[in-house]
Image (cartoon, rainbow, N blue to C red; front, side, top):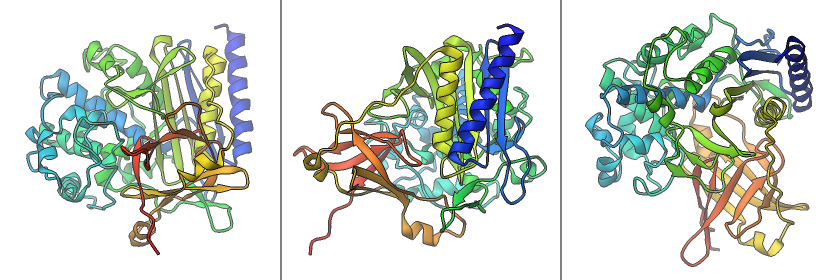
Length: 468
């Protein structure tokens, strides 16, 4: 790429980010691109509406579930060293694991956790403290965690599974989870702006989340981080610059930029090979080892996003094209649409790859009647309804969980336009609001009755209607 085209691309990226952030009302955001062997960054806005500082490529954002890619890669480094076996039962490493289903507890493998086929439900909403025993305490609470299926039966995204993997890391290395990630990955890769601890983050420039208040105006989200027991599934804070370094490692051959080999290339690259298929999901066509795999306009991508309280991040990598893009934003209202727009713009502008949502079918009132109602899992309720325009879907945290929490929780998603997709698979797409672009499907029992929803890789079971 010539100097002129580099400058032009940088200008176009900056102009796009500014225009799109303003349209979505994002207080602050950053987009980083790795293409043609060069980095490019474009930032917008401020870290906080209450205490505004300019966002730049070194500003720390919460990675949310993108943290899982670090947990998985650390595990795979130990697999390469012969210290962990993918097909081994988790109890080989965490013998104290107890689940409501003893057979499942004995059978779940490390790979089941890594590719979300463990059968474990999404998570446990519990604070086990900030001590070094936080993960041990979390695992002890898993005796109360429901299962949505037998191990290996189907894919269902699980935060709890990755928190359990964090405990595997602790038991095998003899370190805390955070120490293990630092020694196995952060330090050798030179990721000097990536931290788990609030004490480390607070000495640097960092973004805070924002959620709509009762009047619909954005307000600072006061609960900044998850509990320590959730660190393996979503606790890392990092900068756009560090995330692009992380992406370059994933593209590479298992060596750090210093030349130190962390793992064989074939082990690192095995993480992007499909291990299980996904159906009707915007997250991808399948799971590799942690990574969501998706083919976009004929090009294979690996991706992972994450959310925190009023913050979102999306990382997409195209290994065969030596390309990566990360988008970070600090608005719980429009963060997801902003990030998705940025990822798509970068794909099209730098690679000529076009990513479009499928077109929904016209509204069918008779078909919609089969779907109406509430669906829940351990933490949230989805409501499928109708308005003047057609089908809608909303998502709220369960009231009892919100009421019992002693910390601020993320905002709910109000009902927004949703459409069924062509085919006989009961697949749908949300077309408006903060969940715009999210895809899923309705599941039926043996009699053809709708009994559940899969959305965001998670299972929601239909709530029976109380009889009069």
